[in-house]
Length: 189
Image (cartoon, rainbow, N blue to C red; front, side, top):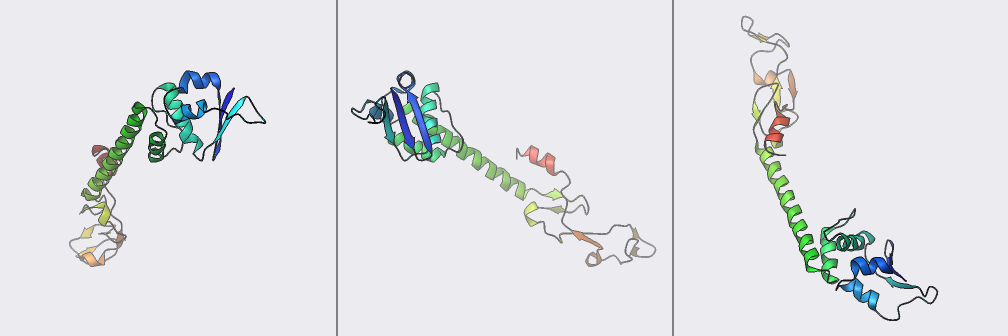
């Protein structure tokens, strides 16, 4: 006898021995399996149930029970998994692992946010003009400099002939962080 779950995005076929070996615990799927008179007239050796749930989420629950630890499949929303596990009365240890994974993911996201804020507020030194700047304030005209040296005798820059005025810079653009990669490593970004 096979136990078939027809889901919104596929089908799961569970042989009876597989079900009894791994999934025969006190939860919703066991209740379905043990429900009397659910054989299909066309296929009397199969119990078929149609459920409007995601196949990968159901497979995650099934494989987690089989391996006795949370086993996530691709593209599984942890919130949806948690809701379904609670609705289907999955074992308490599995619900706890799902909730711990959700909390861990939130902490990691918060940690990344903190690192981004730290990176945004870090004062870098520009490779070109040697001025300190923050990444969030860096604009297309922030860095103003000259390509050439200043000639003290002529009181002019050798590159463009302009005098010693910041408004007469011949090179304008974004600041270039001097040690960006090492700073990112230092704050674990």
